[in-house]
Length: 350
Image 1 (cartoon, helix red, strand yellow):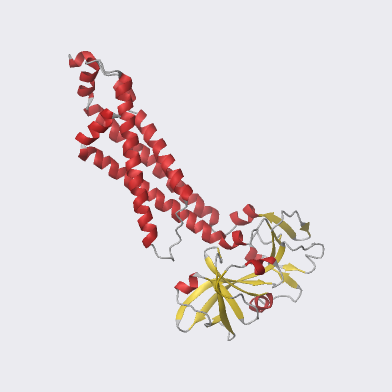
Image 2: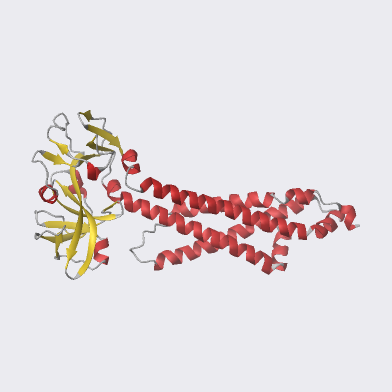
């Protein structure tokens, strides 16, 4: 460690450039990981807030809540409990003269069921009447206020915003919660349709004609774009870790080759190879830790100034996993020049 620190102090520019590269890579990993988690969260905010364990849908809906319709005939054998909630969903375009038009999802609920009762109100109240809606708090940032009257899907009917809610997004779109009667009005259909689906806090295994229950993860994985989005981010982050390994290994290898005469002199003086190897690995870990800590500090600053509309979630596990990943890459990168150090011939120095 002493030798490693002395060398870093002597060659400030060289090791500073390596630290800069590690810093940029670590910052990019922090940023991409936070964006991936933030986008995933906005896809599943509502699903998680419903404490979902199972979802009952039409078997022909391709596990899509918005494509599913359940009739009374479909559900005649379903035994509803206090942990089950009927839900109706339809995409909407929300308009108000003074504010920007918003694409959202309207969700109809029954007031006597658990999802309605568990809605987290930030301000105002829940929708009680057919001409009222409670919307996600993100709409507050877009200028909407309590008491605003909006139109949905170009209809002449006005709906009053009576509340702003927490965790009311699905598939990145904000949710407008209203009554089941309003949902049926926005999505005209046969009179015997009961809901789009059933959300349950229980692990259901229900199956009937054209109806099937799915577990939470299966339902989430089928959300449009969710799996592809996560796979893309995971691939990008994986490549960044590989790039960090290559950068560390290449820089250390070049520096090791340049220092071969010095290593030969040290070996001739009786310095064991393990001391030189330890110094190389220590250098790698010091540079990685320093670069990652600087990236972490910049990430904290970035999150503090980022507007609320940016879906970024810098969770603690992102910090921990990135630190572990970078240290692991640094250790592996530090091992690569070892073979060259072991081949040093002290007789050349003599």
